[in-house]
Every structure is written in structure tokens, then in C-alpha cells.
Image (tube, rainbow, N blue to C red; front, side, top):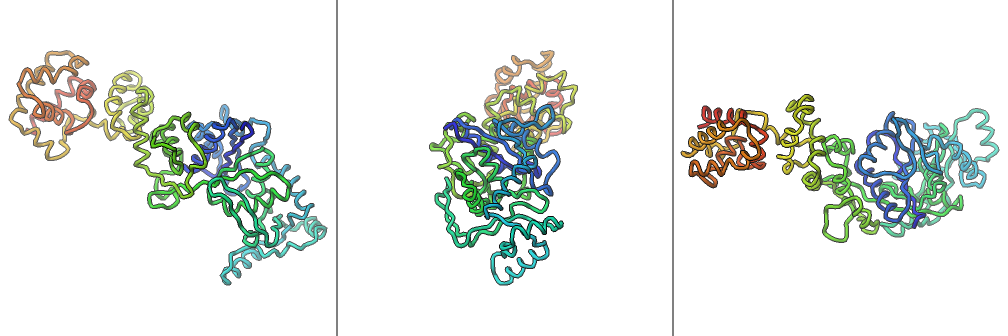
Length: 493
């Protein structure tokens, strides 16, 4: 199926929404599985919503996620470049192409000039609403003679160009997820195809571009389902082959409402900033609306490519659950290379003041050891600052009453003195010391089990449970542990 070609065609209106990333991901997975091409096109004809730098951000966000396109718009050395034989891939650079095809539609009688101003259109809409009707254009200019229309245009009159929707015709198309869809043309508006500023609307440009770029599958959100008949009419007017449509269910929040920024993070950049691993985010996002055949939940990108199918995408919205994402991300963090996790963690540790740039340069191995110690506990990288505070304070604050009671046992004083004595015998704590200290203390004091380990952990960390004690001792070092022993003796016993 090498003729399979899918495109992701967002508008550069700001950040990349997590739902948009899912659409791009599904495009990518299907194209790769079928040996086809995945294209990135920019639909920037709505100039009022254009945001400077949004294209660059979009490209970089997708590449960060590992969703790499074969042709379209790229960023190289900070500049936008376009690659592929079907360009331009930025709609605002394709205006001459749209002029050619809109002229063909007018010539064939499938489109017409409209001279209605905003005031008239608003009045018509309000009257229809008052009558309980669905607001639609009343086709006022539909019968205007083409020659008369051209004279009015030459005289400087402002105009748009509208689609001439057939009267009372059932419009049928197949959707891969929803099956056959039928909508009567009486429910379809005479859509504006060319705006008064000369730019095409989405409905016109997308049809022309998808045809000329040989797009085989049009994948987009279900909100576009109701407008698909307008595009089917255009395909039929031009006599072009209609692509396969795939309308994806909406990404929802836990309340089953559309995921929006009001409920928290929704931009790909937000998740990147917090330290979610791209492969984990992609893994989880693939499962929001799509169900693999087995019960497996952790996938590599290659495994997703092998298993993905649109037929197993649900018709109903998929819920984006941050707790489940955190679980998936935690799995990837635990299996990731420690140097990678350390380098991702460093900016967060510097930001809160736990380490300095000088530490990064001169104490990298110590930082890596510290990160490794809490690697098992974090769900996303930014969370590391909540778990390493035990390494940066010598005033121990037991986490609860049970922890406080652990320091009241009659054996604790003996234990602390023995620990202090063993520390005095070494110049510095090394792996041998850290790994053998509890065996030594057990032999030296006769204290064992819970009575040994629990007071020692609370004395060093203030916590009853946590990371491996050998690693904690190694990271803290001799002087810090001695300070904690003295603090506990003075204040907590």
C-alpha cells in the first residue's frame, strides 16, 4: 500500500494541543505500517488567528514526540524549509492554486459570488434564530448573474465566493470508524469558499490540497464530521476521487468533557516542560481512544506501528487520565538510562536551588547517584524536587507520629552511638561502607530487624519508607549523616 498518504494539517494558532498530537500520531502510525508517507502541512489561511512562531513550535513539538514527517514543513537552522514534490506545504503560499480552482467552480456553476455584508448576514441569522431555525445563509445572491457580479467586482464592491449546494440531495460518504453517513443537502449551508480578503476557507483549501497532494486518508477530529458533506460536494463538482475519511473521537477529561486548558495541562510543551518522556506520552496517548487486541499497555513506537488500526478506534471519546499517564511515564523512567534521566533532572534541581551549575560541572557523578536513588519514585522528571529534599537538610522532621515514636525506643541511643563510632573510623563513606553498615551495626549492638532499620531510616531521612538506604548513605556522605545524628540526639530523643 505504498500509495497510502496521510497528512497532519494544523493551524498555527498557538501551542500544539494533546489531541492534535494524537491525530498526528495516528496518521504517522498508519502511514508507517502501510509503507506510505506522512506529511505535515500548515493551514494558515485564517490570518486573524495566526501566531508568530507557532509553526516552528509545532514542528519541534512533533519531532520531540518522535512523530517525524516524510515531507512538508521542516525547521532547519532556525528557518522554515519545505521538502517534497507537492508543495508549497503552507497554504498562504498556494493562493494562485486556489484562484485557478475557484474559477473552475464558478465556470461550471458550482460556486457563486456573494455581496452580502456582515450587517445583512447578522440580521438574517437573528431572524432565523427567532423563528427557531438553524442559522444558514438564505442564498440571497445565488441567482446573481455572473456578468453582473463581475461588473460589481470591477466597481470595487466587496464580495465572497460561496458553494452552490445542490437542492434536497442525500450526500453519502463512508467513515472508517463510523461507517456510512448520510446527510441531506437541506442541512448543508452554502459555505463561503473564498473570503473577502481573498484567502480560501478551510473547506475549500483542504479539498484542493488533499487532492493535489494525493492524500488517501483524511484523519481529523469528529467535530469536522458535520462539515464533511460540503467537501464531498466539492470532490464531486471537480470529478475527483474522494479519500477515506477517519473522524476521531474527542479527547476528554475525567468529567467526560472536552479537554481544555481550563482543566490543566493540554499543550505538548506543558508535558515536555514537566519532564514527561516523549515515548511515554506517545504510548499513553495512543491508548486514549484506541484499544490494542491484547491487554498490553507498554509499547515502543515500533510496536505501536505494528499493532495500530483505525478499526479498533472507539466511536466515543477517550478519557485523558493524568494518573494513568503518570503510571505509564513512571514505567519508562524506571527503565531509562540513568544518565538521560539525570540530564533531564538537572534543570529542575538547579531551578529550585538544590544544586548549582558548578555542581553540575564538578559533582556530576554525585548528582547521578542522587537521581538514581529516587528514580523508582518519580512519575515525571519535575517531581524529583519533591523526593530529593532528604539530601539537602540536616534538621530531621519525622513525617508522622509513628516516625517520631521510632526514635523513642530504648535501643535508639545505642544504635546512634554505634553508627557514629563506625563513621569515625572512615575518612569518607564509600560503597563498601554503605552496603555493609547495617550488618556491622547488627553484630556490634545485637539490634536487628525493624528495631535496627526503621530508627536508622527515620534518623537519616525523617521517613519510615523510601529509597534504598545504602544509596541514601552514599549520597549523604559522612559529615551530613553525623550532623543528623547530632540533631536527633539533641532534639528528638
